[in-house]
Length: 245
Ligand SMILES: O=c1ccn([C@@H]2O[C@H](COP(=O)(O)O)[C@@H](O)[C@H]2O)c(=O)[nH]1
Image (cartoon, rainbow, N blue to C red; front, side, top):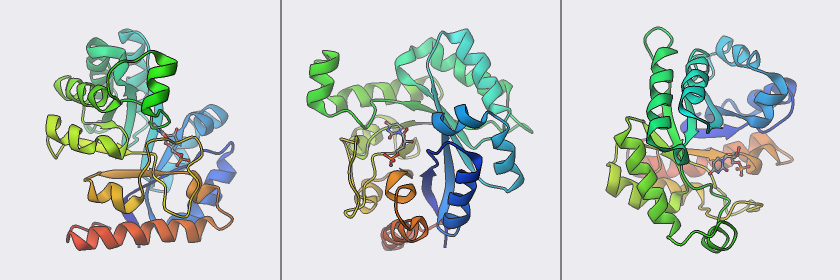
């Protein structure tokens, strides 16, 4: 049974490989994430395949540029009929509001995609954040400030690590959408991800959506890996009596 909150990151080079992963995992996955690797390899035409097959798409291109450029790009991305896309919170309030205006202008049949702000990438640890970028504040404080800013600018939610969920909820309330990468089941390697949690931990912390990539796509048996992640999530969701499939 597909778990609506599970987003599979299709970080592959070809539409054929993406299609193979979709066919293996569709019984368990609620949405598919198209990121830079697949989008830059295949171009926007690939999105029509997802549309034709009624597959929900999170378009993860993390726009970050001057406001006018982001507004026009957001209009184009929204016109593809994806369920959600994102911009970097670091672009600041004028850019965030421009992205929202673009998303509204590109809305299909009056429905615009959810617009998310990327906060601090989950590949940063606190020590790397300080040492390599010269940052002085706690990552959690920065994520909370960017989440608050995103909400004030009218965005729908943020991309952040599960560790910041309490701070985001405190600042923005429980309805503000949280899309959480850096998810690692106990049986999967962390790789370059630093701020991680298991699927069960992240759901218990209140995440709306979990993004999982390599633990499934890099597995020798992606279908079984997706099944295991979905099962772990379904158990937690059933505990809360809020499983939506
Ligand atoms: O802070 C962020 C923002 C985006 N991502 C994206 O999520 C997936 C995670 O894939 P894994 O293979 O499960 O690590 C990937 O596409 C990233 O671009 C993120 O990891 N962290």
